[in-house]
Image: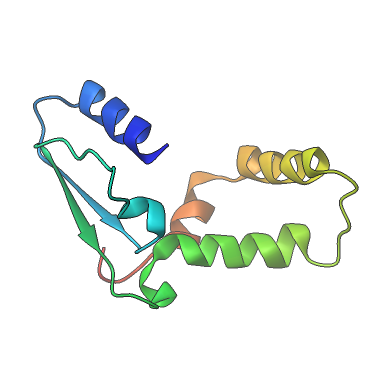
Length: 102
């Protein structure tokens, strides 16, 4: 999936130099990863979720959407998360993912 993402990014922005900041998840550093020349991957320090802005979003979703809820199916969980994302205003997303270094 990471290779597909990088390919689509290259197709969308073939003439741009792109820097992607990633955590050190295995699929971000897979041996078969094909990184186009115009894309640079930069990695956060290992074991430092506090540096990854999306971690704040996941924490909020766990607290506000999934905490103390039993979803009978994976589809029900996905529906609840999709509903939350569709209703989320951009300012809330920015507030949750804000980091002083960005």
